[in-house]
Image 1: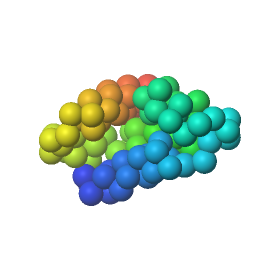
Image 2: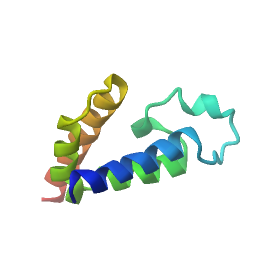
Image 3: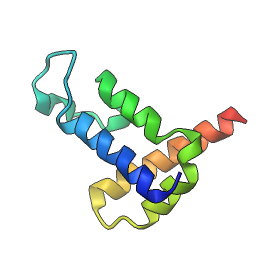
Length: 91
């Protein structure tokens, strides 16, 4: 997957994180207490799993290297870390 396709997965994650439904019926701002990889929201978890799928590693690394936004950069770095670990665990 290339960096443009990874970016679209990131957009889906951002939508789930900021706008998505919350099955816990919490105030939407309470979702922001947790980074995406620790989110209790199943929609955010599903988007995070898609983003960090091992097949996305190359595109995720490429996309991460092009980021200039501090918050996104740190979260993308975590996504690369998780993706690398998932690829390693997959064998």
